[in-house]
Image 1 (cartoon, one colour):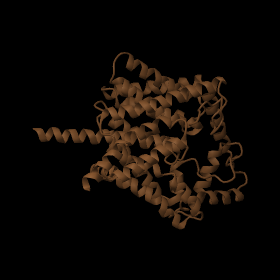
Image 2 (cartoon, rainbow, N blue to C red):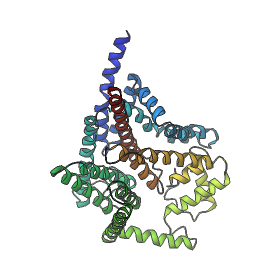
Image 3 (cartoon, one colour):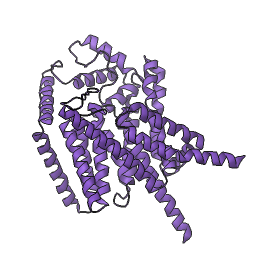
Image 4 (cartoon, rainbow, N blue to C red):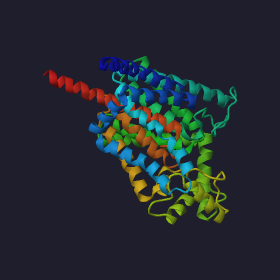
Length: 419
């Protein structure tokens, strides 16, 4: 009986990598298809026991990181206890389920070829998505949703998360190309350049920031140079990005508009400032009214509406904002200083787990650290941990990076046993 159960679990576990490949392929185009594949992956991971295997390994190998993630995620249901809108809070909490696929990925992706197949599927999907965006920009494809349009060609991913998604993918392509030669390196780097150019053609200022931060981190970590040469490379990248922003008509207009909005805010004019300033003001005001424990999970919407009634000059861009377009203010207004501390601890330990790896020997360090870096930068203007496209990609990449580290540790233990 036990052998039959074990064989059944092994059979179910073998279906997990294809499901992850399917999720990666569908990810840029269909939220429903990607969620269905990841949901099936999670379900099979639980039934086959791979979820428990991955969770145990994470607890042993990355206990502080695992504990920090669990504390942050535990605040979501705990915050419902004092939320004025627990039903809305539960709806928001349900969006966080994709983080639990990480232990399954860690346990199921055991060979480099499986990781490469997942990245091949992801690259095929994102390449097709870039072609879609080009067609949208040229007017061949009529599509407008999520801020995406011919003037802001970001396809199905939309205006907010486009820069983070394609910036992280471009970083992996650069790293992958550095370890290859000939046409493979040239092809990977050309596609990475294409992805970055499309980010700057789009109108997402968060994308400009995320790509800049990723580029600086890559310049600092990858070349085996002295500190001064790395600093010089980072400075040259910043200059090149500045020139790119100046040369791009869309980017230049967005930055000028941002500066004009900031000038309006200096004079107390919220109506002519960016809506995010009004949302940030509402978040700080709501937190000051509940400084110790915040307004609870899902409570920002009703508090922001009340503040809007008291300050009609605030510009929200909608009747009831679900979040203040800032991950750090969102944690603070939801759960008070403890929530902000939990968020910063999780992100910090996440970055540290990948930063201390050797980025030249494998993909593990980059795949673990860069998603946390990108989410931290993107979180200045969005609730990046809760958004589908940034969050799902970060979970998949972190899972693949941790799976690579687990495989390396396992192989190292075997080599040690053979001596």
